[in-house]
Image (cartoon, rainbow, N blue to C red; front, side, top):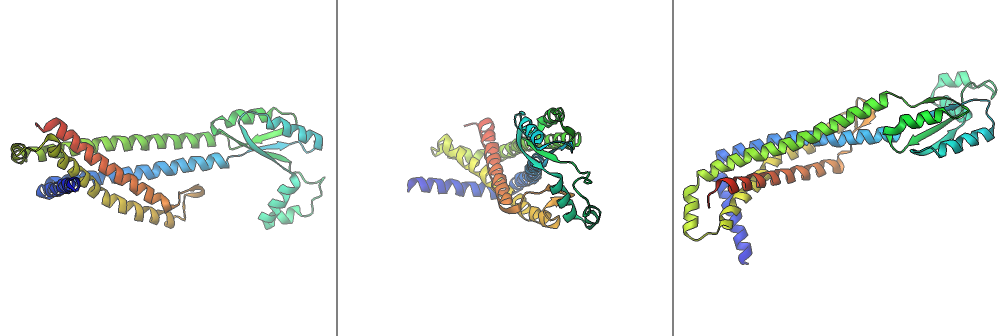
Length: 299
C-alpha cells in the first residue's frame, strides 16, 4: 500500500507541475505534437514504401520467349536449365495456346482476330515465366536465361524495375533518418523546457531537501511530468493518424496513382502506428526530463 501511495503522490505532484507551469508545459506539448505529426507521416510513408517494394519484388516476372519450333523434349531441357540457375524462386511454363485463350478472354478485339487461328498460324510464342528470390540480382538471372539455347527473347521491365527499387530505398532511408533526427531534436527541446521549469522551482526543491526527500523522490515527479507531457503531445497525432489515414485510404481506393502502388490496409496498421507514436511521445518526454534533471538539477 505504501508503494501505491508513493506512486500516487508522484503522479499527483507531476500533474500539479504540468498545470502550475502551464505556459512551459504547453510549449513542450506543442513541440511534441508538431514533431509526432511529422514522425507519423514519415513512419506511414516508410511502411508503405516497404509495402510497395515487396509488391514489386513479388510481381516482377522474367518472361522468356521460346522458339516455336522446339520439341517437347527441348522445352523440358530448357526447364531443367532454368531450375538450376541461382536466385530462381519459381518458374512456370505457359503454352502459346493458353496465352491466346487468356488474350481472347480479356478483349473482344483479340477474340475476333485470334479465334480462327490454327496452331500452325498462331505467331504467339511459348514462354517460361520466372520469379527470382532477390530482386537486386534479377538482371544476372535474365542474362543467364537468355543464353539458353531455344530462348529467343527475355523481358522483365529492365531499367525501370531497378530505378523504382532504388527510389523506394532512398525514400525509406530518408524517412528513417528524419524520424531519428526529429526524436532527438524534440528530446533536446523538452530537456531545455524542463530545465527552465526546474530553475523556476528551486525554492520548492530546497524545501523538499529540508524535509528529507531523497534525490530519487525529487527526480521522479519531473520524469513523470515528462511522461505526461509526452502522452498529451501524442493525442493529436494519434487522432490525425487514425482518421487521416483512413480518409486517405478510402478516398484513393487503397492505391496511389495506379493499382501497382497499393496502400497498406488501415486496420490494424493505424493502431500500430498510434501505439508507436504514444511510445515515442512518452519516451521522448521522459528522456528529456531525465536529461534536464541529470544535468541541471543540483541535488
